[in-house]
Length: 89
Image (cartoon, rainbow, N blue to C red; front, side):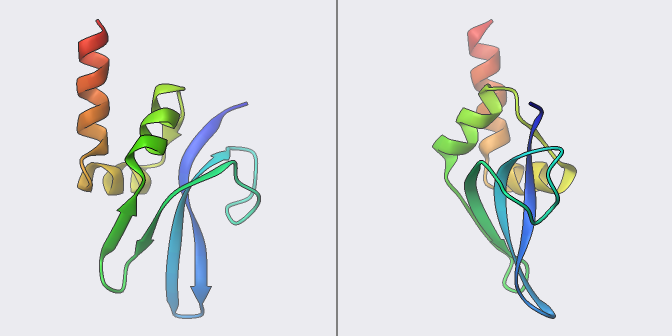
C-alpha cells in the first residue's frame, strides 16, 4: 500500500479548510483516510500539525505531496525528519 500525506478539503463553498491526512494513494482526495495529522486554514494562514504522528508516517515511508511538504516544512517537521535520518546513518 502506497501511503501519501496529503490534504482533504473540508468547509463550505468559498471557505475551504483542509485536513492534513495520511491516506492510501489510490483513494479519492476526499475519501477515506488512515489517520489525521493536522489542519490547514488558508483564510488565516494557520497550520496545526501533530508532529509525533507526522514523524511516525514519514519514518514509515509515507510520501508527502508538494503542498503537504511545504506545510510540514513551515512547521519544522521536515527539518526534524531530515535530522533524524542523518542521525541514524
